[in-house]
Length: 215
Image (cartoon, rainbow, N blue to C red; front, side, top):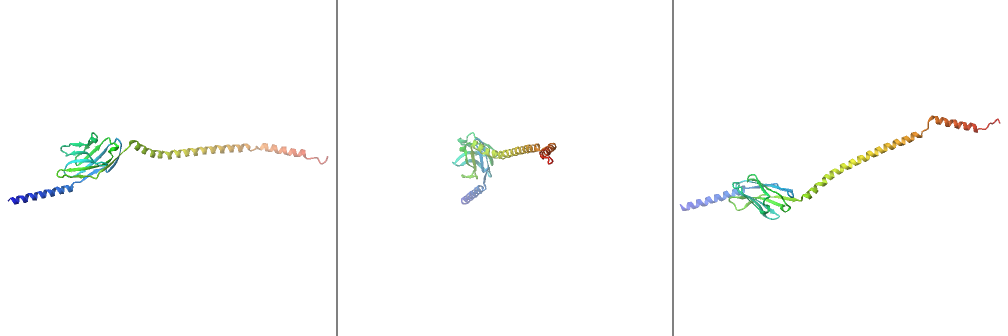
């Protein structure tokens, strides 16, 4: 009888271990976004999606230094532990299996890779997610980078308007010059009466200058 009880206990332990191993294989952690750029002073939201029963959930900074940003307890207690560096700058929303962690008032020192890690009830090791790379940029440099496209779009329009006005001015100038030249040419033309008068004077001079052959 004692031997049977020992065998039954060993068999139940083996089955439980297999069940724990199967549950471990089924656990998956996904997170989004995979990459984001945030201006200094802004906020970033990272969503950690898991399946299976969890004891808690970590958000860990894995690069450039390894540190735990926050630990979120099971959904019943809904308690959390936040690192002093992020104290007062972290908020949560959603259920534990689809938890969104938002970090506010980001500084350049907060740039790095953040990873969701699921903590299971019966395992000592955590299950990590793929990670999210967060780049915190300078607000002034971001604003300066946005200015050149506006200038480059306005410059061609200004050049087009300038060339149009220049062409219009040249056209008006040519028209006025042509009108002036035409007027000058018209004023130089002689009237018919002056032509007849000149012909008569020329004939008279010829008559007076011809000598009388009978004298």
